[in-house]
Length: 99
Length: 511
Image (cartoon, rainbow over all chains, first blue to last red; front, top):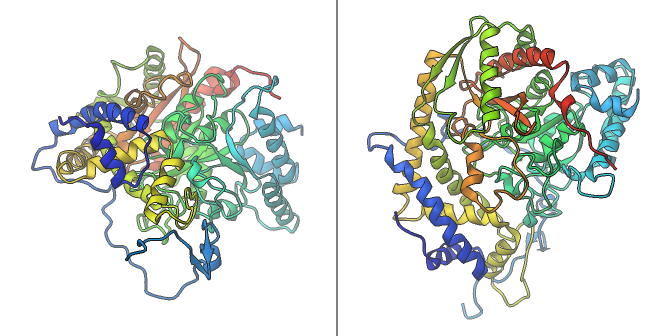
């Protein structure tokens, strides 16, 4: 079983856009090692010829008719926004000034 | 009728009292709101049950007055009209805040009602407020709530289970006769077991997930909770059914759960085949839990059921598979909390980029368990590990479903204890994730396979005097079987105990 290093936790946190304090990274690295070790048991039984199940129900692609129907107003959709302007979500800069 | 008398009544009785005019829905609602205030803290001002994150007194009284007006106008009322209900705070309500127990959603008011909330309102149920839970329904103790733990009414130093500890504790301390929970790995059934109440996880897809804030979408299922089997069935029939707004909702008739609960109350289980799951017992199970469970199995035999032992060899791998599948789905679902469209935004000082603000907000807004599961899920889904972990876990899911299919060829229902132990002390497992995860050993297989399962009170463990739950599992869309078995066991045990199990709960001084 691979062990999860401190650097790896920090990398995963970056991928997940999750700011972790230094002590959180230390703490999580130790715990994740134990958890991964325990859950790794799944490899003991799952043979190659077993199909994977992603979902308990055998439903696929449920469609509805493509018709206009009532939906949230722009005002309602923006009601929880940290910041809104001119009927749109206002967000921090996405591109740097140079771009 | 005095307020304390009203809060001890069943939901069916309260609805009948309201319908006959013996009392009003407003009076019933007031009695329960008073009870909520009384048990939130103890007489000396110490922490009480703390089941609710938000009490919507004004809205509740208005909804109750509406029911009273309908009755006065001669309208026909539904079977639960005017009955108060506690709603788990992971289900969106347009007129009340919805937090999912997380700082990242503190104070958020959803722009729409969940289908479950709409169904409750349409049936005349009175939503008292929103109940506490582990953050994003992740946990088995309610200690992962950002807003303080809920305490078990049987012993305020112990956990009420989780993630739906608030809903279960509200029932057990007579703050509401009905509650809604959600169950991803046992979050309805485990709290029911450790508080001496009833909780049903319907078949996956049986109750709409529209407006249910997602934990793990392929596992999450909302369901009914109450203090007795008939009330649970009545609530089940209110919230179940096909919803075009949920693409995983089952487009088939709802099983006749109320009829099954009434038939089961005759106490005759002849012809029913019951399988005791061999793998769910033994080492790691508390002796008092095993003792009550074995008595319950004997009782099923006395009521006429044919009891056999059944082996489900892959159930022991259900827990590890779950703790790969669940965090994987969580890491994806919680990505929506990006500080852009709703909820918390931290660090936006005009110089930071959207990505930096997103990262800071998520770091500040999520609690320890949410972070743990996001990191674990990101790991399990990352290239190089995907096949070894997530892929293998999905194969185990197939094996667990096959175990169920084989078992249900031999028997009509399966049984086990609901949890390996009774309620443990607050703080005991909060930083020991592997120990905490083992609470869900018996409940997880049904989430992986999507079949219906329930927990019913079956007594108190000798060593600590705390409630034990009987776990009953039925096939997909066999929800009615749970109610038949539950009602039969209930009538026999209530007769033996001389009243409901909750009558034996120790009293403590409320404020």
